Image (tube, rainbow, N blue to C red; front, side, top):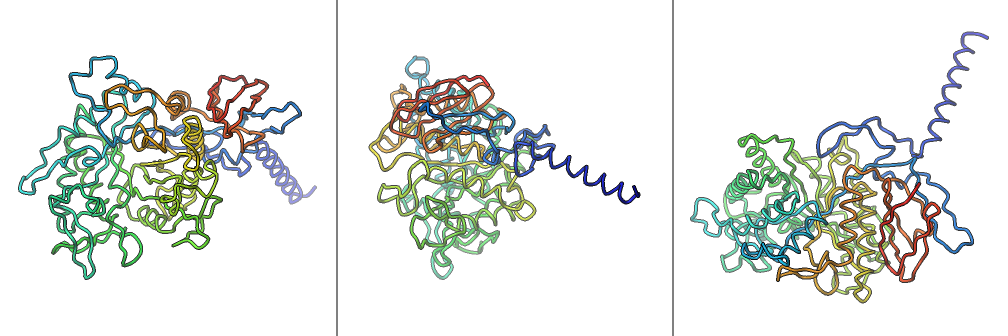
Length: 530
């Protein structure tokens, strides 16, 4: 055999061995990096078999049904990922903040106990939604009205959560909205809590005042006993929509600070806030690596119409995504000076459905939009959009509830659980619920309204508690195959399996040979062998 023939034979033998090796891997896309970097700790650790958003690509085991009338769920431990997922809550009223004299009673501690066992993050805006203006008087050199915000942040600390601050809804005298011709409509003190105030941005010539408020907020709450390290910048780009361009002002333009204008771009403001907080951290001797700042906090709109406004190329069975929020995220990723996470928000409702109360798609199908947003972000080229594949993805707000049907706590729980399972499997990091007790009529929360200090847990609370204890960040998650995925969803860790009945009838599930009965819309966590 010639030397050339020897080398050729050796080459084809190596190639054959490589193909055999790859075909035996549970990941058909052949993606198995040797190491991944933990986005929270910064520590390098061995990679799982796949990243979370690749679990759906696993080949899976054959879970085809037999004639036993059961739905079969098989757990494939040859394909795994590591959970990044944690639940949180945004406080939108003061039902959980109890007066000091009531904290010793058993009933007053109910809400605190429920918080401790169901969520890992607690977020509060620095004003609004139950909190006063920390700096109502422009003649005062500094903000001084901190007591209510102190109580909110202390609540998170007392109940073992990671506190988060959303920097938005600034004092009335700092804000305005753009007018044609370049000028701005300003607010009066009497308009501070009007609906108009929630659609304003910082005036270009008041940016220094806003950054001074950010500085003082960071100085106060990054220090003990609060030790805040997580910040979200603004809220849904309120005030940044520009009807003249039918899009958001999201650029790095400083606007026109030489007068009363409201023309600067969101990314400009974000970058100023980011730099201000990092300077505070350095001054206080806090590692900047521990400080996590997120944006752009834009609402991810979806349209049901056949000819939607500003359609993107992302079209799903529940609707077409609006291109404008995508523009915001892409630009922000390219032009931010730094970030600790990406934060967005959305609802199960599409744009046209908010007023009708009806969903065009099956609610379980519509609820997949949260996972689809994560997948879209992760699909962006990180060489162009820095951080798209490495920054944790948060939902600053998420709303998932069965709008078409009579309110049913079990149905609500099944839908919320399914929503979060899909979000987790897509590689989502943190999901902050808007309030603890829902809206009282169409959306069940974690527990019943609790202004008296005592609350009764809703079914969703028990599922949330399991997600916190059994599927927390760092937990290995395994691929599951369900023979009837339109009826049952499954999430598996090493020993625990969360099953969700997506139907209004009872079903029997076979889990690796173990029989489990699920009542209508029941969410059940079981131990399993396999």
